Length: 77
Figure 1 (tube, rainbow, N blue to C red):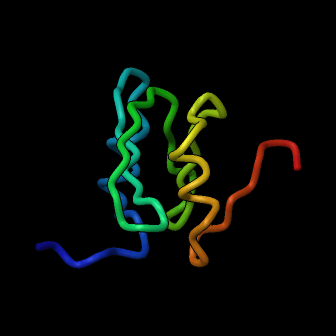
Figure 2 (figure 1 turned 135 degrees about the vertical axis):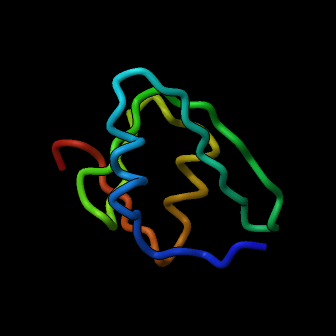
């Protein structure tokens, strides 16, 4: 198993800069059950910042908001 990382490498950020891509946001709920969402609007403007479209909603958004080590911020707020 790969160790968790706390940042994105320059290579990661370059891959996320492509105009056409499909991404996957994988989260877990409070009981540890997995949840996967496909997204197309994803970028990494900084090594410790992932930005994805608001349409990524529902359970994934709630799971991310519940994590203490993830700062969840909506655009314009």
